[in-house]
Every structure is written in C-alpha cells, then in structure tokens.
Length: 68
Image 1: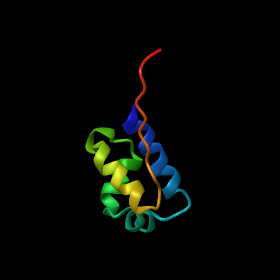
Image 2: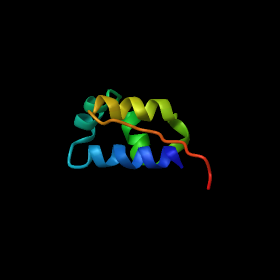
Image 3: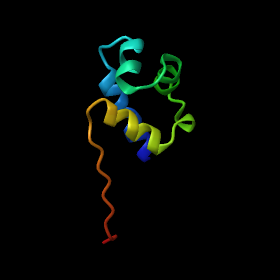
C-alpha cells in the first residue's frame, strides 16, 4: 500500500515532463522510470521510491500510531 502511494506521488511529479526529464530529476534512468510508470510496483523498494521523491525536492513522512 505504501509503495502504491509513493508511486502515485512520483507519477504526479513526472506529469508534464518527458520521461528523460523526469528520470533526470528523480535520479534514475529513463527505462527504470518507464517501468515505474507502467506500474511494475514489485521492481521498486520503499527506500528507492523515497530517494526518488527526495531528489525531486519532496519530503516523505511516515507516521505509525497505535490502533484505536
């Protein structure tokens, strides 16, 4: 679920750019970005997605709370 949400955010960051421009911004290759945009969620760790968003100037915050 977390990976899906992060991939959605990466897609939002990449919107309106060429794949090469977005890949450069995220610090990955264009073929790797293509996998992400195609929804190959199993190819990306949480750590990799957080790093991509950080390179794009985004801050990722994870909150864990006790269940009610």
